[in-house]
Length: 91
Image 1 (cartoon, rainbow, N blue to C red):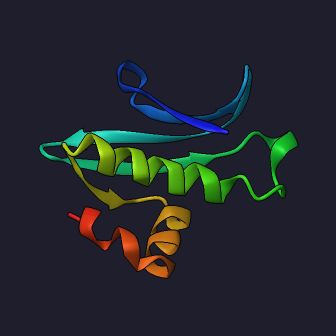
Image 2: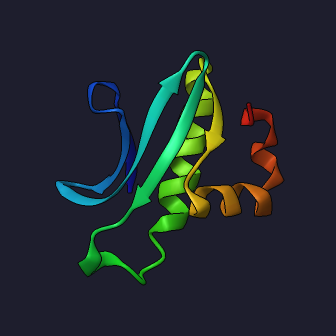
């Protein structure tokens, strides 16, 4: 599985080969990314894809080193609360 950043579409995408597995949409607010929504296609739900989608996105944001984050999406907020290793990214 791989995370790719599509800045023109304001999203991070989880995929495996050519298969779309999910996305996190964001909005830029200054030096902060507002993480608005994490979504996995209906037919892929229940397979645990939210974790690699969220973790991979946060790791990509950290690696890019440009933005902090504010999780608006409840799933992402809960993930970040349970995984304090991403506290350095919080706005």
